[in-house]
Structures are given as C-alpha cells and as structure tokens.
Length: 361
Image: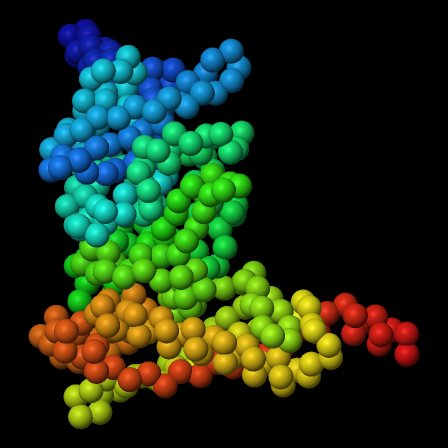
C-alpha cells in the first residue's frame, strides 16, 4: 500500500515538473525585437530584407534600420538575428513592403515562402513600394509618428483606410496565384511631399506578377466589385460633389455561343455635399453615372488587355463553365467577355440647406 502511495506521489511530482517546463524557451519581451514593417527588394540574385528596429532611448523611441541579404528571405532574416543581441520576432509584422521591380519580376516564391514558414501572420498586408524600400523606411523627417506605425494605420479600416485604397493580405495573394478565375490588386505607395505615405494607385497582379497599374479612382470600382464598402468616397462632378454612403451589386452571367456575357447593376446611395448654381437631382445623377461608367470602361480595358481578372468575374462563371475548361478562363473566355454595366444612384439627402429652408416655411 505504501509503495503505491509513494509511486502516485512521484508521478504527481513529475507531472508538476512537466507543466512548469512548458514555457522554458520563452524570452522576455525586452530580449526580443518586434518590427511592424518588413521591406523586401532584390540585389542581383539575392533578396535584401530591411527591418525597422524600435529602440527605447531616454523615454524616446528611435527607429534603427537593419538589413541583410541572402539567397532567400529566411536566410537574410537569420543573418539579421545572428548579429543582434535580441531575437527577431516576425509574427508582429503587419505590413510587407515589396519594391516595385520585384513585383514586376514576380512574387510567387516570396508569397509561398511566407505561407510555408509560418513566422509571419498570413493576415499581414502586402504593399508595393514605388521607390527603394530602404530609402522609404529611412525617411522619418516628415512626421513624429514612426513610419512603420503610420503605414500600418494607413491600411487599417479603423484608422486611415479609405475606400479607394486596395488592401491585400498574404493569404489572399497566395489564393489568387493558384486560382483560375480570380486575380488581385495590391496598393502602391511612395514617400509624400507633406506626409510619409503617398498612395498612387494599385498594381494589377496576375499569377503573382505585376502586369498593370490602375488609379485610385479605378480602385474604388475594384473594391465595389469585390463587395468592399465604398462608404466615405467623395465624387466631384461639374455641377456638384457627392458623398457615397453605401453600395450594392446585382449581376447575372451566362454563356452565349460559348462566349461569356455579364449583366451587372451597381447601386450607390449618395448625399449631396456641394453644388454649383442650382442643378437638379436628375442632372447630378446623370453626371455621376456618366463619370463612373467612363471610369469603369477604362479600368476594364486595362485589365482585360492584361488578362488579369481582378474583378473576380470568372467566379460568377464557375458553375457555368465546365471545371476542365476553367484553367483557360484568362486566355480563352476572359478576352471575349462582354459586360452590360449599369449604375443606379439614389440621392438620400440634399444637405442641410434644403432641410433648413423646409423648417422656415
């Protein structure tokens, strides 16, 4: 009996030791470097990785740039870690800046590497940098806010994001690379004259490679097609400016003689902000719908020519086109696609001036 009791006590002590040792390899936060932004470029055949290292110096946070090159991004990061007194923790990275020339060469291996190693969150945003990434990250003179925090907030919906700005996370880009019917747009930024970040449009990505560039206004339609809210975008016409407060879309797709046709209606609800003279509601609606229709045709001409389906139109034909033929969507079906697009605008409010005039009657 005593031997059984002794054995149970020993087992209990061993189990307690196992639970205590569960965090044996944890490192204090003071011994870790937690960058928010990673910059990636290429020098000849090697990747160059740039990180901003936050350092506390007499109650002031300083940003030190650290960089290394390697045959892979993992090797470059390993070199950075080897020369640091702290562990590099990549899981807190929120934005990955990829230099434009690298995106034009192709990002398939980069994105696949991020998906495979698991050290970086798959929800991190990918952004194209239209200048040298090291120069971009080193330019801290235009703001008191660290650029890495500024760039992250720029794409956060609860912070600085606007509806004409594209957003692309690692997992979304990876999905688009291996999709027959859905490509993606990635935002492009550079250093601004009066702010650290100047948004200049979006890069059109097909199979992980940049093939075209669209404007910020065209990106608004891209977001609308992909069911992103366009609330907050201001449209300026000849006789008025309006604020978009909501949007929705209806569509019907079909094959006619093995050629794809799509009938689409996008609905906008708007509020009138300013007017020139005394234009009627009909004139304001006519100008708005004409402006957006012309913009869409310019956008669609660009992406159809580059065989990049960033609007995800092919997704609407997945139940119509046989699966064995879907792999030819971009090259055979998409170039022949015809779209009948209509915009419908509903003016929700004519502004406080009319409301006040009604009160005085």
